[in-house]
Length: 100
Image (cartoon, rainbow, N blue to C red; front, side, top):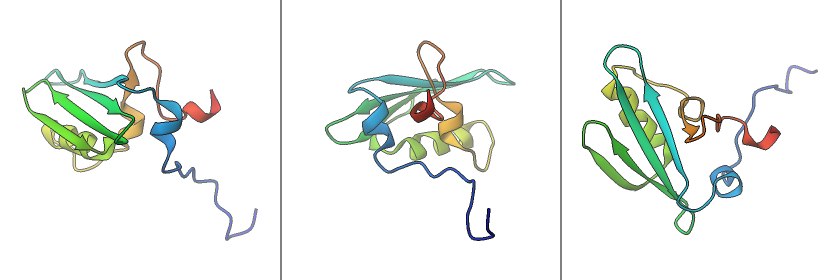
């Protein structure tokens, strides 16, 4: 592999539209320390999410990144890979649905 090539994975812009169904609920449960969670509901028509937080806060028509960064702030993190933390309601990771 040359110095120009990279093994870093780049998620395509249509990842959610390709691998998530309309109104699919995914969640991030933070179990260390204060128990917090966020549920994200996918809107395929708009290609956006609605986030519902354990604190009672809600955001609509935003990216999964925005929902995840709000959650990260709520638990005291500065940043995170939001795709790594969200799972389906059956517990399946959504990080790399393209290889499952």
